[in-house]
Image (cartoon, rainbow, N blue to C red; front, side):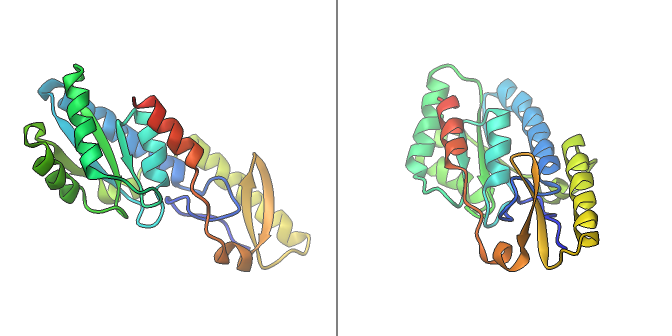
Length: 201
C-alpha cells in the first residue's frame, strides 16, 4: 500500500502529496522576507525553488506570494519578455519584482545573468532556497493529510486491498493500482498558472 510522500506534488491520482503544503509555506515565508529587502532597495529578486520535473512548488508559492513571474518546466517562456516585464513593473512605480524559478528551468544565477544582459539597470539578486524546503515543521494541512491517508491505507489493507496507492481527490480518499500511478504523469494545472499570470499584471 503506497502513500504519496513528496514535496514536489508530482504523483498522479492525488490532488496533493504529503509534504507539498509545508514546502510551499516555507517558500512563501522566505519570499515575504525577501520582498521587504527588495522593496527597501528597489531591487528585483530571482528565487530558485525545488522542482526538477514539476513546477507545482513554484506555481503554488508564486501565486500565494504574489510573484510577478513564475517559470516552470511545463510552460515555455521568453527571457526577453521576463526582463521587459520587470522593467515595466519598475517604470510603473513598483518597488520590487519577484521571479520564482523551478530548478527544472535552470539555476537562479543563470536567470539573473540572462536578465542583467537584457536589462542591466535592474540588478536582480538570486536566492537559492535549496534543502530548507525539505525540512521544518509540517503544516496542519500536511499533518491532517498524512493522518487521513495513513488511516485509509490501514483500513484498506484490513479490507483485503493490496498493490494500491492511496490518494485524495476532491477531498475524498481514493485507491488506484500502483502500476497505473507509476505509469501516469500528473497533469500540470494550467488554469492555476493562468490565474497567477492574470493576478500579477
